[in-house]
Length: 112
Length: 114
Image (cartoon, rainbow over all chains, first blue to last red; front, top):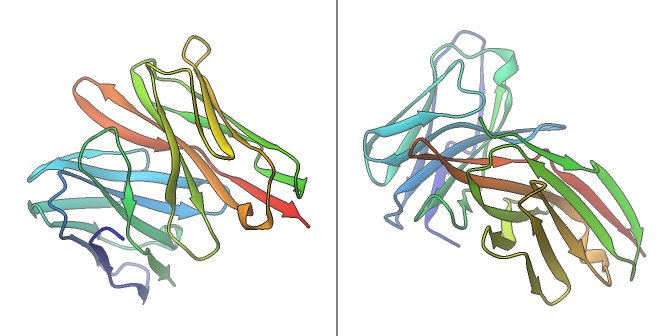
């Protein structure tokens, strides 16, 4: 498996609290992605990064922000969590924009 | 932006039969079309991909076809086995104004009945 880890793997939080998910890679890949997975919706792109400090919005970016201050880390922040953000979040990495995505193990977030 | 539609959402086949999953995409700039398999409780993993300069690609029991004119691509699994049971996702990636978005379809749950 590619060197990609997500933390935390499981989190339960309350509505209105801030939450940060971390994606860490040891592959030196340029592209990093955050997806959420919900039944019936598949994998939806939240934000992605194509280099340090270079990020762009995906399909469902409202309520989420990201930061990438170094190659190996891509942070996803929910400024004020809502119940609709209860989901499984996957980070993925890729050496280029058109190639295999290597996924992390996922982070299950429950917002009460 | 890019939109990828995938059908069917569920598919049940008898062991040994073939399975076909179809996807359509909207962005004509897309040029890379991968397929991922996700087993229960696991992360998605690439099983096959195709680029826009190729019409068909085969790897043992799985094959992918691409029709760029119609903007659709399909996954074909022959001689299905119980271990093929999983959720399959298609995706499309391409550049619009210099940045790339990697967009997935909504997934197909394949059940292979023994």
